[in-house]
Image (cartoon, rainbow, N blue to C red; front, top):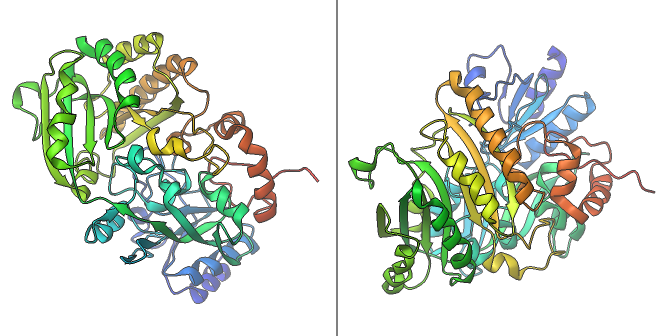
Length: 461
């Protein structure tokens, strides 16, 4: 980076500016996905909204590309751009809970662990992800789903307002009352419209839930999926359960005799009365006797963080996703084939429910365009060894290609991969795309924020 520009940025901002000449550069530029190896010209670690405003203005005026990083969990590494500037929000973490109003103001660099910890003390929370090291910002802007989705909807269904730095460096607060078009777009439209420095969420009652894990051997996979596709959409909204194909990790609560076995299963979360949890889980014998069944009451933040140690930063990741409104017998054939071919011990396929309360929000109320979807699927090849990166890609891509014809066409924007086409982005937003493109033209006419699954500004007059 030009020395004059670098000095200008460092003088204007309170937070540090890290460049390739700094000893901490290589560590700071790391993404959660170790397949990502990009070298920004600078990483600007913003401490407050004023830093973000100044950074946007300076980067834009110098004609540099910009990327935004919160939790750095972007699978395709959209939080980093070669030779550009990454606006790093991670120093801006913190949550303020108003227990009377049942709201939480969440700084743009906060992680789900920050949000869950702060709200749990008041017996409150929101539906958001299943890995607590995920950034609140990226997850929310993509729509967001998690263990509480059938009970309380998508993450964006709890969003009350957002403080946003726009492409011209100005600052606005978007809500149903102020900048309602921008607020609509932020609820599922990704990072296309600005940098959110603070989110305000409405909170819901949740404290101790019942976790359940049920596993079957792969010869039961067809029966399990045929049962699951009928059972779950009819189940009480207090019961959430995502279907998984996995290799059993060598860790509690799994007994040693099933360690390392490829299995299928459901991870349950019951938010109703704990006295009723065991009755809710009685149904797990219906598709066939499980090889393993575990239930326990747990504080909600513990459920949110239970995969953290299994999926630390620094692993190789390659993923693709789609929405499904049904699980056809033909799709089950595909799942059966590729579950037997899981390439590594950490690779998975998950089907997350996005029905229940998420279906009670009208199709046009937010930018999330698949209110009729029942599951959000993700196929992820994962491993610590870079030598396995090719096999992860090959398995994931082949699985997705065979499964995609049985999907609804689009996918959860946070599960989209590297190099997604404009047609793929368009089908992900369906008939919302043109409205989003019009809003993009209003708030970012030059497409300054394009390091994302990009919605191009409308050219319509």
